[in-house]
Image (cartoon, helix red, strand yellow):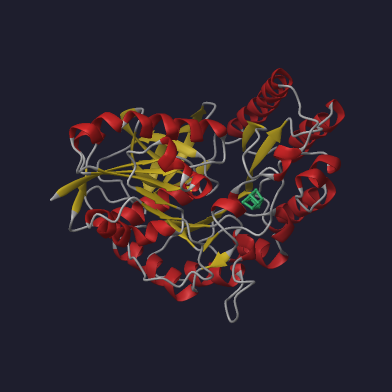
Length: 440
Ligand code: SF4
């Protein structure tokens, strides 16, 4: 059996695509831990942040010596950087054999055959018009996971000014519901108890396809699969979050009470320039309605600081929004120019040191809010789906609450995959600690 090494950068969609590539290679390749042991090296890339892109070039550049020692070694660059750069990758890194965009990773076997037949290097960055492709059902081995991701759509039609996704992942296409349900059923048969439905904008699932369910309808169908205990989804665009979907949090027991709802900025002027197509008040109105429907819902978000033209007053609006919503957690970034993104052309850039100052202020505010939110769990009993031993302390079990908080606790052996009740007795910045009460 040959060996494959896969390194994945970026989001959960990339993690998912890497898993599907491994499934496609089954029977011919087994995974290995080091590039030097591999017959095939695949680097699945992300171009959302400049740093990730630079890391990819660094890593693939360093593989040159392996190719020199073993010319039969096949090296592939996949994902968003592959899509964005295409043939340019071969100019910069002539030892690369495969350049596969995010939609082409599903054509990996055909591309490998071409390389072996001497027809390489292969560059495949073609976008498809639909998501109808052979169903690749996951096969989980060894240490079977309790939770899994399932892609329900690809691409995005929103063209936010700072974002490269519509260019690197293409226009939005939704996956047929029967394929999604078949994949979730397959995962559940293999012991998975929680799935996260993935897409760049899951709320607009099915809108462009005739006869497809809405996202809320799909969510209800997935949740009804016997043996599946929990369902999550990401990412949601605030403009497309509707009442039907909000009601799922209250009406469908399997849908976990957590929503990642990226706001990006608190100023209407900046939101407009970002082309987000909602105002701060519209965002806040949706948050209020969500909390009416499901008071226990936990909210998380993304924030970009220092978008071109962001003034001190615009930035103050973002800080006020953080105080008003009190997100459980945020993912915050300094704005950076990305090739292809429209805002790269904007001239009124915020200086680097000012962006760093604003990011640090955002961190300070949110760290306090997150700490206070975590402290509010003290003395409460929560349901935890046990994922395995804590990576930081193997004597403890780890899992997540329905609201997506990490909980570490001690307990008897064989808890993996079980739902347990834990009394929260302590907390840190990123996790809760507790005492197990019982298991189901
Ligand atoms: S919604 Fe905006 S930020 Fe999200 S993937 Fe689409 S274009 Fe990018």
